[in-house]
Image (cartoon, rainbow, N blue to C red):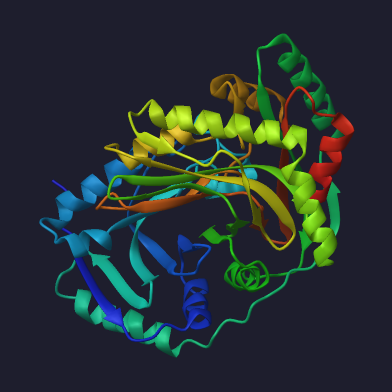
Length: 420
């Protein structure tokens, strides 16, 4: 029988984010920072009280398994306490393929229930501890709170790259050629082919880079997963799934065009994207696939007919919000959605098999679902694009583009170059 666990949650009057991130940077980990685009939900977590132990990649079923195990060990909890019991982390892009060795302890993804969780929801701040010793949990809570309040604030840190090299360019272009051949014969309808780049990196603190991304790239998710010397960072505009009380929200994000500092040109680029046949075709493929995937779970689905625009600091995308209602387990919905054709392809299984055989290396957590699920089945997962992998003195980047029958190899090569 597993040992009993105990949970303590209290509100805290104020939360200084640079102090909290400095505290996180000093923790042994695994560490997690996650904030939604509207900045009304922030989580900072460290340590694991329960996690998945496996030589294989973690998967969405592990979300339910971890929460069930924790509830068994914690006993009866109130609805409020259940909302503070969370699994955090992410699964790899392909749950049937481990990442390259450079990913270290993140190569199979990482899901865990944190020992310590700092959370801001709307305007209320919480500090939660889960421990096995009921006699020490109060003193430990006070100790952690004191550490957070007294740690010197962390300054946002920009990183400097040198010797950036785009990897396996000829292999990437050959993969595009093969993909177009398979699309022409009908074995594929679409596939998102990616490539990688590496560069040398000045010494950085991942938590400080997270703060810099938060300052420089507003209106996106800001994500950090760190284990020892390996850190994954993402500033992504793309939501995979948000779930609350049997209401599900997702989105199709497919077409891409650059931003411009001149507002007139920026607006013209936006109009170009809204009327570009290739991008509109790709967007519609993703929208229809997501709607069908949700309907297979007997959910009632709604979405606007025409796409909107969603912008980041550097690019703008076609964007279609999609909503669904009905009874479904969030882990089941996540498994049904990931990866959408915006990151994988169509048909789903054939596209994943193509990527496994033709991309120069496995993606690891590039494009992975990253977020949280609580014991009330409420949660949110973003798609880990616009991301990088930090290891000592090196950064690893990934970019992909959607290949359909009208794609041109030179244009797709330039698009991925711009993203890298």
